[in-house]
Image 1 (cartoon, rainbow, N blue to C red):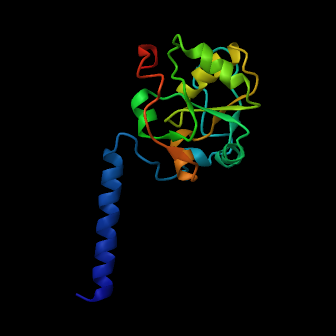
Image 2 (cartoon, one colour):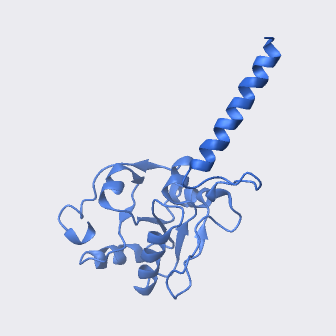
Image 3 (tube, rainbow, N blue to C red):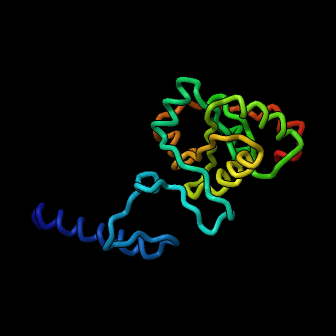
Length: 176
């Protein structure tokens, strides 16, 4: 068998394996429509899907948020759980999960001092970030944005990060 025939057989076999694996996937990719990463969508990757009755917080792109972070012109709020926060978070981020706790008031007071607060979570749907952003707005934090693409987009975009446990969460079960 010539090399050209072998290449055609290998490519055809690979295509068949790919199509079979895709059809067996719980979330198969459409074979007839372009597939885009959630962070590449023009309207922002975070979308409301029957969320809270109030309007969602405006979104902010990773590049714009990185510039604000680098210039210390915004506060960042991590809306994920304590284990995810400890594994990695935006440098200097305040940990404020969706479940309100007694220590929220001190965090909100600190956040009010910033001209802008950027909230993120770990999922492209941004559901947790939307909940925390709504809570911050109800508490009087005027300028709140939700990070498009969440933590994965921040990391992929080269945003600054660090790891370590939340100093408040260890003593406050409400944050867990």
